[in-house]
Amino acid sequence: MFLYKIEAAMSVVQIEGLIKHLLIKFFSDIQLPMPIVKIVNNTVPKWLGRCVYTHNANENRSVIEIQKSIANDEKTLDRVLCHELIHAVDFYKQFGHPEQGKENWDKYVTHRRLGFKSDGHGKEFQEWAAKINSVMGPDYVTEKSDTSYVIEVTKEYFLLVMPTSKGVEKYGWAWTVRPSTEQKSVIQSKIMEGGRLFMSKDGRWMSGAKIKKYGGMSVPTKDDGKQALKDIYTSGKDIKPNWPQTITKVSDFHKKMVNHYGPEMDHILKNDPLGVL
Ligand SMILES: [Zn+2]
Image (cartoon, rainbow, N blue to C red; front, side, top):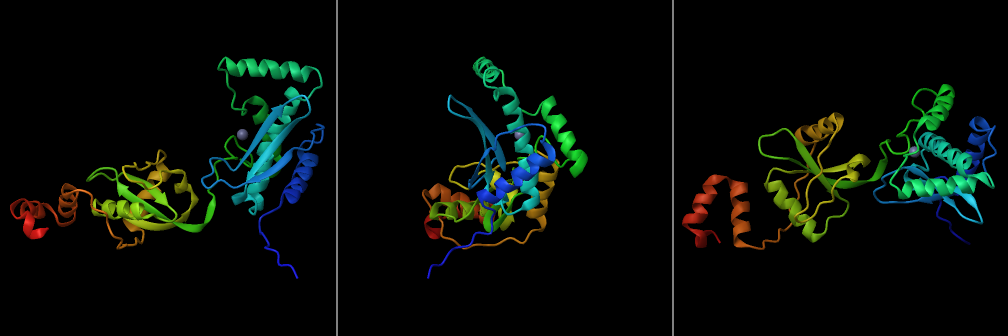
């Protein structure tokens, strides 16, 4: 008897099925060759889907890559596929023609070399998006609909939040999944400097800095991010780990003691260092 591990996420074949359905529904007047589908699994995805086009002598076809994290979220998957298919159609219209396509491709490559870049979300893209949105609802496909969803991360991870400077209500963050000995030490010292440690499942913070020695914190740029981080810091339920700290220098230790116990400790350490150490 064989045992199979059943994956809940959609398979490549199922995604191809969805694409065929979308091609009939929205792109029926274009004979788009079936794009190649790949499921990828980046730990910290910068995109949920993307369309990569390669033009060579044998084959001119788009490859649509989909993050595994959205492959079991049918609505997000559908929206991302719509977005990527617009890119695939655009590539096909520009470069798909047997003769004219090659010429256009060469022009495109020259343009890129000269530094002209198009992000692919111009007028044509907007027109296709409007067509799909008129059926599916406003903002079903947007310029950012391949990147802007909050990915639900099922696994909890450690989220360190701390004020960017003393007495200021601005917060930065860093994260890690499984803290190493060094990361544990960093977390302990950050907590002594006012940081708070949380467990989080919210994927958006995973785009920020990883916790590391001498590493910085990420700072939200948008208002909703700033507010969310402030809420976590001020009213989240933090955890207080008791991990060992690696003390490298006596001066570090001194600083940590002062941070922890206040300026009085500075006085005590200065006057009777041996007594405390
Ligand atoms: Zn795009």
